[in-house]
Length: 168
Image 1 (tube, rainbow, N blue to C red):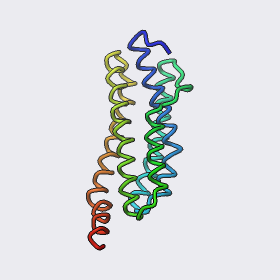
Image 2 (image 1 turned 45 degrees about the horizontal axis):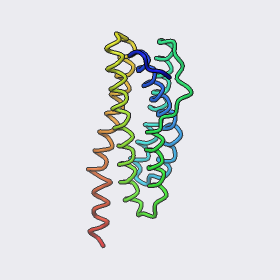
Image 3 (image 1 turned 45 degrees about the vertical axis):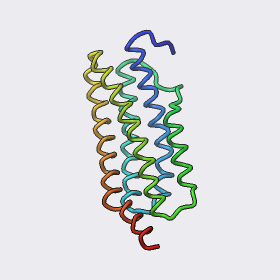
Image 4 (image 1 turned 90 degrees about the horizontal axis):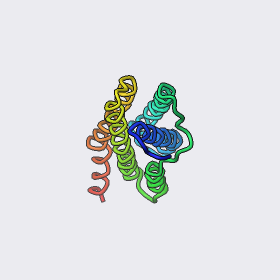
């Protein structure tokens, strides 16, 4: 795809997000299954439902803009998911794996926050109010997920992981 205009760039960003979110729909159940902390597992399951809604929002945006989002592969998300998969297969104590899963999930969230922020800024510049609103809804949810992961790490999982080391 040749990027000749800001509109072209917006479509490119939306395609990247669409691919990223669809990859995440497939990865989150594996992360949930690997998590031993119940709150973390529930968080992954909740975010799976949100992620499916993110895909739907992107499809709604594509329909409004008259563009197709299929046919692109987000290599960044592919790499982030691959790293998460490697962590799942590591020989580790359960609580340490949970801490690692939180880190992997936060890297995903930070990528999505950056990508949605970029797309929203472009849509805003182009005057696409409905698109801005939908992108902002998802951006808010991604930020909230990141905050929940931080809270879970700081108040539970990382504390338990530190206690594991102290007990040895």
